[in-house]
Amino acid sequence: MAENNLMLALWREAGRHVDATDSIPLLAGLLGVSLPVSGLRLDERSQELSDLVTLAEWSARTGLGQRAQSRGCSAAGMEAFERWAGRRELIARAPGEHWPTVLRDIDPGTDRDWALAGPLLTGDGVVGLAVLRSPRAVDAAEKALFQAALEPLAAVVGNDFRLREIRRLSARAEADRDSLLTRLGRDSLNETVVGADGGLRAVIGRVEQVARTSASVLLLGETGSGKEVIARAIHERSPRRDGPFIRVNCGAVPPDLIDSELFGHEKGSFTGALGVRRGWFERADGGTLFLDEIGELAPAVQVRLLRVLQDHVVQRIGGEREQTVDVRVVAATHRDLPELVQQGRFREDLWYRIAVFPIILPPLRERPEDLPALARHFIQRAAKRAGLHEPPLDEVALERLAAYPWPGNVRELGAVIERAVILGQGTRLDVEAALGPAAAPVARRAPPAAPAGVAAATAGRGGAAPVIVPLEQAIAAHIENAVALCGGRIDGPHGAARLLGLNTSTLRSKMRKLGLARTV
Image (cartoon, rainbow, N blue to C red):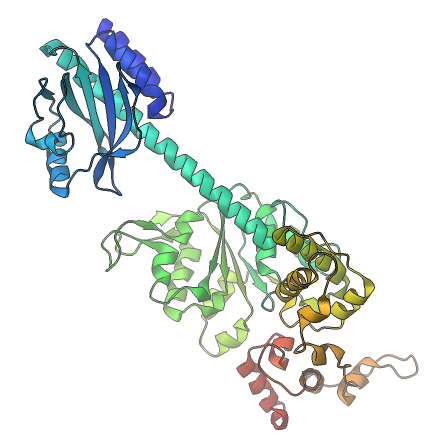
């Protein structure tokens, strides 16, 4: 009966899920009711260090000892320890004597106490070592009692590890959240998207339509137009809002690593695979996976991605087991995917799978009504980052911002505003210096008169209905207008291709087809 009461008390303490340091004085006290106890130490087997690390140590003479102290065990010593632990044997040591060879590397010292050591095992294998110190020799019945106590003591060590892991993951998640909010310039994840009531009203309307479903969404828009913000808005408005939101830049991952990143790998599946790795799909299970720049994926990866989207299963590299995943995919690109499909560089079946619900984000130059709100938003963010006062946004600065075409869209606006805040040192917004001389010619240049085709298509005859010209003629006039606005430049950050949201080679091909090659 006494043994049952002891085990019940030990398991109750193990179930409290607190630090081993906080538990060990109580554990020693509980053991001391039935055993001679002058000290108790719990060591954890560290996978990272290939060593034993003391989690908690208590002595009747000195109280609590140092936590997280490595035992300095050699590789050979750890191998011998694990073989001994697998046999679930106890080892006793008399005062002034050394431990047997199997434990001498772990605890080489001698002291005036008797000592009894036992391995700590759970369903996951060997998790550590327990050492009981006693003022006298321990008899056979007491050894059996200590042997029985090793199971709840192992649970204490396992719970201590899980508690530290939860704290580590929580701190990491909090840091990731703060980093994300800083990057987005927001105070919380539930803030309203800037422009939701202005130039992005139609976009937010489509977000509201699709968010409650599990349909795949394709975000189309120029670089810097805010695709990640919209992807997160979809996630926040969906039933998956409490699940993970994982962003992946497909163009930033080397081709030889993309499979491992997307689908994960097993230990030893290739050179450098030192452990098991969960892929993006596994980590996003129950949430949303944002695949940015999906047009950069190699054809071979597109095949495997298509299978995951169709069957909702992933298989790690080197693995044999398929795993079901519940992931909502939001893809994004600034490239002309239909053009890539025609060129055979993007799979048509994958296009149909990801473009279930396309949303087109307008460039900043097409939503001038949002410029004041965006500017104030970025001023607030930049001042907070730099530790400066928020400078006012006067009419002169706003006119200067409105005159610039913003080829880099919202991202470029954020960078310019931050530069303007720093240059003005919080007292004023130095937009002129922030834009720099390279932007001045573009900003000051008045748009040229519309070519005849565009003018005919947009101007009525004495208030009559407008004249409609052939589509190719209107497209040719629009391209000529864009090229003229960019000073004849096709590529580059201020070229017509960027202005039109097209790939440079695509624009050149269209110009040759329309007989505009003379301006290329």
